[in-house]
Figure (tube, rainbow, N blue to C red):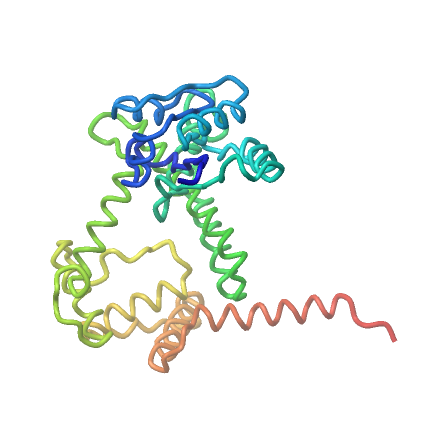
Length: 326
């Protein structure tokens, strides 16, 4: 049997005793060592295995254990104990007959594990002794920042800059986490947390996608969208098809959304005419709304169209500010 030193690496984001069968087999059959007490060392002891914590001399202790038992296990810390792994690797390279070094993963980070880190960091920042700025914020004081971060993410999408989008979505996530952490300080009966946010989202996604989670027949995209709207209407008792529209969005986008909602139920109400001389602003608004309606009929996004043209105009202005020298 080949002598071996097993470096057992585990995810710090999972319960300490949640290990693979292979990991438990080696822990119960060989001497186990660690550099410090931890939840993992306690879990291993509760399962009936012995763990010796070493203050130093780990390399020699592992080699002695291998000589006596054929296998020794080192419970790696959260950082992976890279210095020890390097030291062992060099020693075994110089003396190849001593043992083989084996890296074993007892557990892995699940998808989304770094979200747990983000929640932990935000909790530290927004708790007593954390960041004074974050502690002084409210949902209302943060509202503008949430809009700004969403616009910056929109800009990254418009520029097809996926690296920038990744960063900007992180800033949006920061706002979500901060709002959720602040909500934990609300009075009893009003309090909620990031788990409530995530739980509500999960329930909604499962409920509104029966073609994925409930075995419903999968139709065309149009049928899936229509079913989504039916489920949404059943969930929310609304007096108007316009309920739920974000009224703070830019005016062109708001106009397009209102026209879209009215179009879904086949309701067309022309805007009231305005006398250009008596109320020039109202006349301009009616003209713009008619333009948005025409864009919708043509399948165009008026918000994106105006943004594109405005940005092109801005680029032309910048070029005019610095004409090429003759």
